[in-house]
Image 1 (cartoon, rainbow, N blue to C red):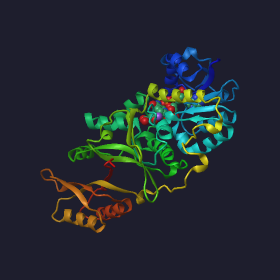
Image 2 (cartoon, rainbow, N blue to C red):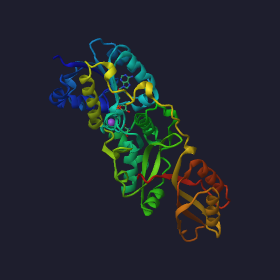
Image 3 (spheres, helix red, strand yellow):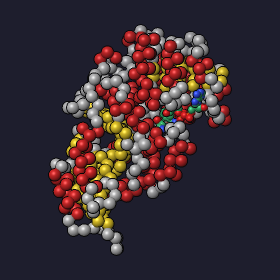
Image 4 (cartoon, helix red, strand yellow):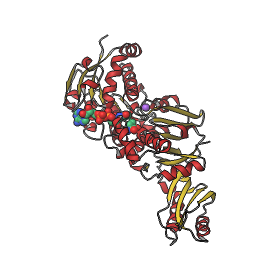
Amino acid sequence: MEPVKVGLLGLGTVGGGTVEVLTSNAAEIARRAGRGIEIAFAAAREYRPESINGLDRIGRIGDDAFAVVEDPEIEIVIELIGGYSPARELVLKAIENGKHVVTANKALIAKHGNEIFAAARERGVVVGFEAAVAGGIPIIKALREGLAANHIEWIAGIINGTGNFILTEMRDKGRDFADVLAEAQALGYAEADPTFDVEGIDAAHKLTIMGSLAFGIPLQFERCFTEGISKIGAMDVVYAAELGYRIKHLGIARRSETGIELRVHPTLVPERRLLANVDGVMNAVLVKGDAVGPTLYYGAGAGALPTASAVVADLVDVVRSLTTDPNNRVPHLGFQPDALADTPVLRIEEVETAYYLRIFALDQPGVMARIASILGEQGISIEAIKQKEPGEGETYVTMVMLTHRVLEGRMNEAIARIEALDSVQEPVMRIRMETLSG
Ligand SMILES: NC(=O)c1ccc[n+]([C@@H]2O[C@H](COP(=O)([O-])OP(=O)(O)OC[C@H]3O[C@@H](n4cnc5c(N)ncnc54)[C@H](O)[C@@H]3O)[C@@H](O)[C@H]2O)c1
Ligand SMILES: N[C@@H](CCO)C(=O)O
Ligand code: NA
């Protein structure tokens, strides 16, 4: 049989990795797919030919991505440009032209996935996006197929490699934030705009996608609560460790009685938990299903070859399904499109968690008692409290406390009252906590 002709948009980190994997593993991939896969036409604005193994195997290379999606020879388009636009226009045009699409672009899927999947369904084509979430880890496959028997209860994941790399290097080597970020960029882990990594936006894109796959709800990126790692101080890492916790940037999706939680934020995790020990650029996703119990998926969340692994796996899936009835394919979000639920996504104020609080206050008698009584009046009970002895001649003291679970709305009121005290000087630092059990 003739090889399948594929078009490739983008020859950067992931595009280059995809060319390499398709070249070096060509025979094994053909054995799995049933046909060879040939990159007939690629387009990129810029690329470094010397750094891509297998470039000579590409039929043609140009710089106009629209020429690829308009080429009638191409059956499958791989979009590895990134960003919202022109990726959206390119993908929609490819679909309109009856081509299947494989993409690593989580920003695109989280923001425009509902529109893209509807267009693909209409046209009877597949859009594969395994590489968009947790890089090489087959988490989309697991959620959509492997766990299909379950009511998913919750998901908690380390889903941004750059952020996890920064937190790990800061903790283990005391390295400077900006310095580690620059290294992550040089290694090809970071997004084109690295604030997407640092401020949690990239993790929110991925969590939005996993939330839809877990609970069968439309993609709602705007409703995902998003907080990054930029405000975490070295002292918080140390204090958390003294209390037996590590700070990890987590994406959490949970089904509660009142709705669905979709939240991305730094989180204190007990140090013995597996997720607390996922370091460097590695990602891990913990999924709790009602039948299966907890399951854990671990692997490289970024980088050329790991991400290409997921891109090529999607390609193999598409090639295998080229001759199948479009109505019998795995639905894009794992639930039949007419069976998606309108369960509300909760506002963060409606979410209940435990908290780590760090308060910088005047070292005077009664201050601690006043703070404790404000928390008590808000119905917040304290699980642990530590007061850092002030240094010689210092008049301020740092208090660190862990609270029991409380609604975020109540915690906001308590923090506002604490910050209004004359004896409290700086904003209260709050980090949410999860036990990740049960
Ligand atoms: N780098 C990773 O580890 C990683 C992992 C998972 C997913 N992703 C996703 O994969 C996608 C690609 O990321 P990357 O790191 O390979 O990016 P990159 O910046 O290394 O490469 C982008 C490529 O697209 C080309 N390009 C950009 N705009 C273009 C246009 N309008 N027309 C033609 N070519 C254009 C660039 O010239 C370059 O060749 C993004 O969506 C990213 O979020 C990246
Ligand atoms: N910038 C992303 C790439 C993988 O999606 C990360 O660091 O996780
Ligand atoms: Na993946």
